[in-house]
Amino acid sequence: MPRGARDGVPREARRTWAWEVGEPGPVASGPLRRRERTVADPGPYELLLEVAVCGVCRTDLHLAEGDLPPRRPGCIPGHQVVGRVAAAGSAVRDVSAGDRVGAAWLAGTCGACRFCRSGRENLCPDSRYTGWDIDGGYAGLTLVDARYVYRLPEGWGDDEVAPLLCAGIIGYRALQRAELPQGGRLGVYGFGASAHLTAQLAVARGATVHVVTRSPAARLLARDLGAASAGSGPPPEPLDAAILFAPAGDLVPVALEALDRGGTLSVAGVHLTAIPQLDYERHLFQERTVRSVTANTREDGRALLAEAARLRPTVRLSRYPMDRADEALADLAAGRVTGVAVLIA
Image 1: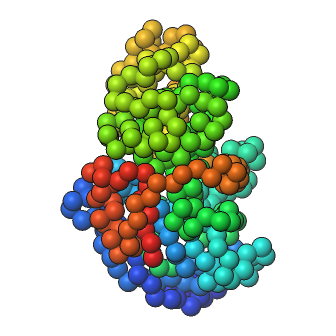
Image 2: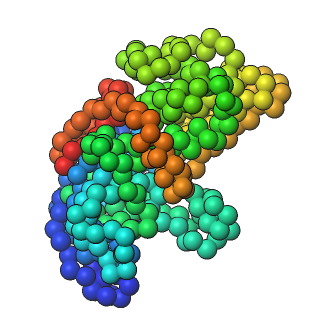
């Protein structure tokens, strides 16, 4: 098949620039490198996006540092992509050139397995992910599947809406998985991009939110956004539910011990360090539950965007030009980002 061909049909190639993962390793070693790349014209169901903004996610950091092994050489990170359609494939009917759309973590599924057919496409064995299986948004141009993009709420700037596409969606699913009762007490462990949005959803739903984080700046932000408490120690009362956003397995028993009877801990990360041994009576007895969160469905994305459009949560932004993506990741690794970092093309 000729270079740049898709579905057996040769495509023209366009030049763009991009940040790619070279040799994964500590961010201080410079795993990201800026390169000129070629991008083919879109296939039948694809969109060629001109990237306007891409959110910076801890998953991008895991990819760059090798915690999440790259699935292709020279992978381009970034899965909170807001862009304008530069070209659309021949089979695309509901999106036109110039439209603003968002591309998120879930990039494709088989559509035929038992998980896809039962509304659980996030568990599809053949699922693909933006910035991992396909190139992401740390670039000038990127190709995405039109069937997996989102129409974005009006009245939001590109930089404000980009974090909703992962930080928002994954936090939404984590909150659903936590099964927080109406008016319940929610613990939030770690307070980065996803947590600062999810906490606002929970407060708007009538929850009492207690935040646990080591960062003084994050504790101040949590209180500003409506948290009932924010500290580095145990919450001041038993919890009905908790969400672990920090990728620290040693917090699993800590969070479980803070749950009231029948409480649920939802673990939101795609990567987690080792979980220490659990004690059944201290951590799990009295019907406490641990649940993982795996990606999201497109319905999660649509529901989150609709809820965000109604509530208009505050998005605390740290803005970086796209040519400083490596600096943004370094700041994220060092805990210097409060809220969410975004790359502006």
